[in-house]
Image 1 (cartoon, rainbow, N blue to C red):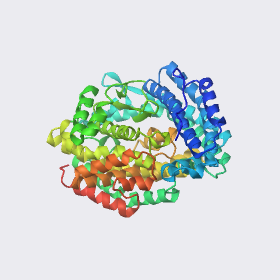
Image 2 (image 1 turned 90 degrees about the vertical axis):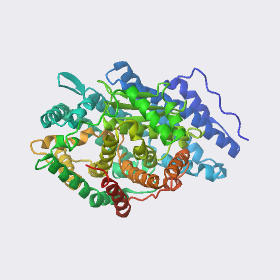
Image 3 (image 1 turned 120 degrees about the vertical axis):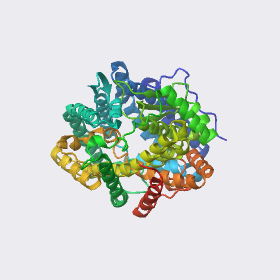
Image 4 (image 1 turned 45 degrees about the vertical axis):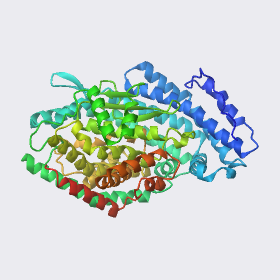
Amino acid sequence: MIALPMKLPPSLDAANWDQLAPLYRELNDRAFTSCEDLERLILDRSALDAIAEEAQANLYIAMTCHTDDDVRRTAYLAFVQNVEPHLRTAGAALDRKIVESAFVKQLDSARYETYLRALRQDAKLFRAQNIPLQTEATTCDQEYSRLCGAMSVNFDGREQTMPQMARYLEVPDQGVREGSWKAVAARRLRDRDAIDGIFDNLISIRHRMALNAGFENFRDFQHERMLRFDYRPADCQRFHAAVEETCVPLMRELHRERAAALGVSAVRPWDTKVDLRGRAALRPFADTTELVERTSRAFHRLDSDLGVMFDSMRGGACLDLETRKGKAPGGYQYQRQHSRSPFIFMNAAGLQRDLVTMVHEAGHAFHSILSKHDDLLAYRGSPTEFAEVASMSMELLTFPQLDEFYSPEDGARARRDLLENLATLLPWVATIDAFQHWIYTNPGHKRSERTECWIDLNRRFGGDIDWTDHEDVLASLWHRQLHLFGSPFYYIEYGIAQLGALQLWRQSRRDPKTAVANYKRALALGGSKSLPELFTSAGLTFDFGAETVRGLMDEVQTELATIPA
């Protein structure tokens, strides 16, 4: 029988290493004489790690909600610089203590195999000299977030954030679209050199980390570090080729159809979001209160369990949804692991894409809630390739509930918009991933060479868009992809997961209840199974070759044929 868990001080400040240190020291010094003692150590470590992770989560959330608040930014950086390095060192020591234990082979393999495989990999790759480099990289990413959060433009008589400006790209008036796009582009170009400088630093830092760990380049190191046991860089390149073959032609054909409908010779960068019939832009909600209420009704109709889960986030400081100046870009869901309470962050401005972000991040939250029962922290999540299935599936499974937001005609427009965007998303994923492969296998490159690589990739994966007179904007378009700065190589997951989500959508078109049941069953497994096993548990195939991509895109085109443009 496993003993009771270690007692933690009720007033523990997990943002203070002086308070955490003796607790980690006790774990590392603990002696044990049985498999049960080892299992107790694992579970006690999970409980302590969860408290430390939640402290970091709360500081990160506070900082991203107000990047212009010096107190919040300083508190987050203090954790990154003064606590996180100690946590990495203590964690590495515990990894070794566990995997080198004489009792490790007596652990239940069905329960701990996936956990131990990850620990062995982490222990193998850990280098103490990389800790300050990781801290430096996080500091660089925080500076990138600060720069982006400070961006705004004066347009239409008032100061507006970048997410707010996106609304103008949907208006029928071509002059307004062009003017708004140019205003945003000019503002972003003002910080081009600063952002390039941050990225140059990140490349240098990451290359040194790879060399320290005995790798020739950061790409190969990061793939190992991200626990990609079930695919390799060559498989990513196979995905790139599959997308080039199956998705890029569809995307370019859609752009040519768009140009013809708009009566122009070629689509310009400000023409990609406007309705082809000149209809007003889709506006699914007036404010975030309405967004939450309508989303709740949609989830209750999709599945009562999902509706209850969503409603559980309507209190407890679980949502920060509206855009404002000083707020970091993008959207995310962050599970606060000690309280096991999810948090959703986004920049809503009343757009259709905000609705997509809402249900996407809610999918991540469902994943967190369904797997939160596990006492093993490592299993209260999953590989990101499957974590994104949880979120991307919600974008598609909620199609029948779009009438909570739209009339039948506008609901059809919203469905078409999302399906057409799939033909854009997968090529963009391939572009970002291929870009990183080149960057980190050529770490000594010049900025001009990086730009040349980016332009070449646009020729390979880009749409049929005319960038004449705005080549400088195209050259730095990758600056908008925050993953490149804070989460290197975390992007191919979106492509792999989109293929899983499309398979689940295909299931739902034939049997909606079974599809949702498969979804919930797989999410409840958290990270306790391998990536292929998680896909299988949801009735999906883990494959991203040309044949799989082609079959799913055929399904998309079949559905598009039923929806008027």
